Structure formats: structure tokens, C-alpha cells
Image 1: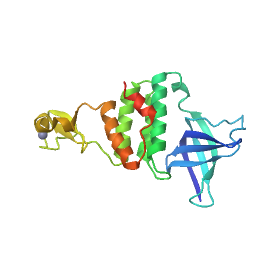
Image 2 (image 1 turned 30 degrees about the vertical axis):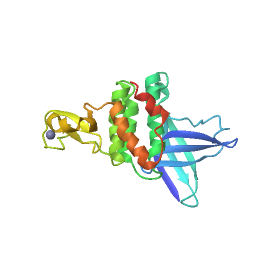
Image 3 (image 1 turned 90 degrees about the vertical axis):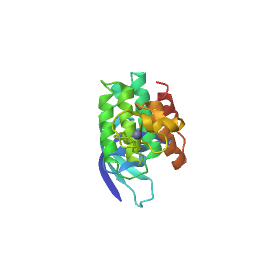
Image 4 (image 1 turned 60 degrees about the horizontal axis):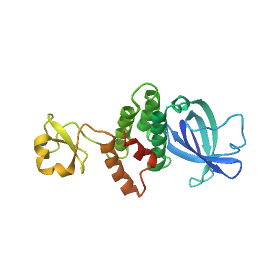
Length: 217
Ligand SMILES: [Zn+2]
């Protein structure tokens, strides 16, 4: 089996003394994991987290950990490393992708959103830009938040809350009897983390520390 696409290098782990195991978030196949042979001793073309580039991935069997040929073009996050806030956001984004996306399934809308987020982090408020990305992540995982109209009466005005259960907006009037079951709008990182927690409970994992850290802003 052979895959070819472009992608972002989002994870690296040493494997023995010469090799690395890499996770690449790719445009066409979502997350792909495989070996970067000799990457630990290759000083010339160093593999670094945050690089974007083209790759090919080969495995004799579908179930095998394949091997990459990786051609980095540039590093998208190098300029974000100097700022603690943007660095925290980048680490969180890469951790969530690694934790939540199944391997080799296409998430190209989220891929585009991720590239666009990394661009925005250079100029925009990192937490606002991140919030939009996380809403996209939730949508792509099947937990779309719907803020268009009240889930109780259909009204488009006075949407003051979001239901903790359905992720749909609720107007002020409809929310009155259920104030313990709704979160206040507008959305912020302390609200969306509750929905993210649900995803982690269903998938049987734990929210990464890098995401918890962002909620204190
Ligand atoms: Zn209503």
C-alpha cells in the first residue's frame, strides 16, 4: 500500500537510536503514522514538528506501521515558537489531532482550517482564532454546535444560552426552567471544553494538559 499527499508534521517520537516515529496530518488521508528511518542521525534534513511538506508512505500490509519519505518545504510554526500563547495553541492543536482523529481517514476541511489557523496565529488573537478551529474540530467529529436559532421555539433573537446536552442555542425565555443545564453565550474556551470532554469520554481518552491550560484564559 502506498499513500502520497502533503501534510503537517504534528508528532515525533524516538524509536531506537536512529529512527523516529512521525505523525503527519495530511490533506488527503488525515493522520498517517510511520517511521522516518535514520531521522535521528540525519543532520542535513532534520524533521521538525510544524513542518509542512510532501510525503509518500509505504507499508506492505494495511495494518503495518509504514515508512515515510518526507520532503519538508517550510516550517509553519517556527515563527510562533517565540510567543508563549501561540506556542500553547499550536501544542494543543497538534495534541488534539493526534488524540482524536482516527488514522488514515480524510478530514480535509479540518486540514484547511488548521493551515489557516497557523497563518492567523501570526496576527490575530490566538485564543479567538483557536476557538473557531475547535468549533470546526467538534463539527468534524460529529458534535456540531448549532447557534442559528433557539432549539425550543425557533426564535433567532435573545439567544443567550447553549444546551449542555444538545449543543444547540436556547433563547432566554426557553432557558428559564433549565438554567442548570445550559451554558451562557457567547462561546468561550471554558464552554467548548465541556463539549470536547464529552468526545473524550466517548472515545475513552483524557483531555490533554495542553488544552486544559488554554481554558485559564
Ligand atoms: Zn426559545
